Length: 317
Image (cartoon, rainbow, N blue to C red):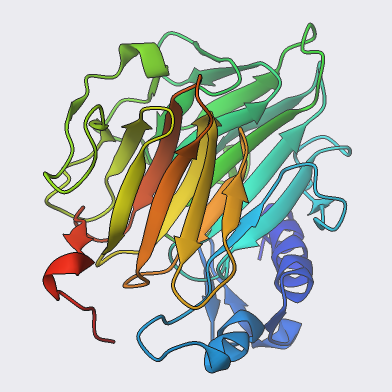
């Protein structure tokens, strides 16, 4: 095992413990490209859902990047010493984990690549990312970015950034970061790109949703797995109770939202709050306030859908 992978192993092990996933370090089998769990994982969050209605599954939750209880762990050795990585949701040794990645102004994550595609929103600071074979992409707070797996890149938190750069990343495959000094990047036939809210083409929402609701596809095919969308809601509008086949991994870009999940207290989303909505958990959503529209980034795992619960279409686990 090379030193880079070994460093990532220790970080992932610490992250698993910090995120309340009960597994010992010696149960993680690390290969050159991924982290695999040899034995079962007992997720405390799932245990806590036992008092919820059976239809709900795992509980929903929110998390802010400046939450004082957020556990920041070291990045791989080839990255700066003051770089940080925090698990938000899931098991980084498995599919569909979410993380925050933090760089200080004026520092860079050297040339590296990931096995997984990265679906990202910058929630703090200003960044430049130099992908091999492409012009640099510049991210401001609220910018969406897509980085294909296998495509090497260097990430810079710009010197004139007033705040640390914090990047929300939704991974599809297990979390890794491989230095090109240790292993050559395989490359990708896809291109990296960024989108701001003003560049998104919005279509209509399902008929049961309110007037002025819009849905824009950021990346992928919404009829297939792993698509990203931007939901737009007018101020003071409400989406009636509904559910999704897929879990939702979300970041609010603008406005304020209140989401009422069945069997749980309401959750409040402010700008750049992360929210996790489990699959098949009925809920309604309100864009709070008279002035500012709500823009919500959603990373789906399964094909995009929204099922109106008022017609008796109840989910079953």
